[in-house]
Image 1 (spheres, rainbow, N blue to C red):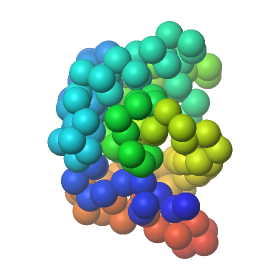
Image 2: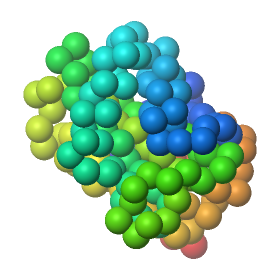
Image 3: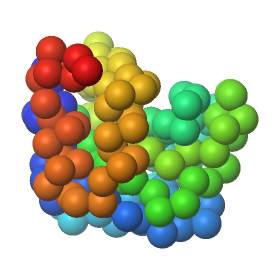
Length: 154
């Protein structure tokens, strides 16, 4: 599995303007609905349900909110680079400005965990994170997200 299998170019938000976690999840759910055909409200509700268990902020300004839906047929992602960092209750206390949302079928199991691990590894790579923060071009962001891991060596 690679990130290019999880995310499509139209699932990249290059300069999302929100002032809070809930609004970020809502906006990203709307985009997820557009790219997947799934109801935005169900996506949003699954994300909120997961957040109640604990923040999906992973540290270093990165969050990986995720949810599972019965109607979802395959794992997919939506990426947002925020205009301004927001509080996400991350364990390190730092505000978040890079969000990779994952939606998976309820039966995804190990594939869901692999997708989470893969996106966390990529976004927590300081070189990649710096490049993502430095660009507002959706095509450039998509390229950075979907490059083969070996090409991330600086």
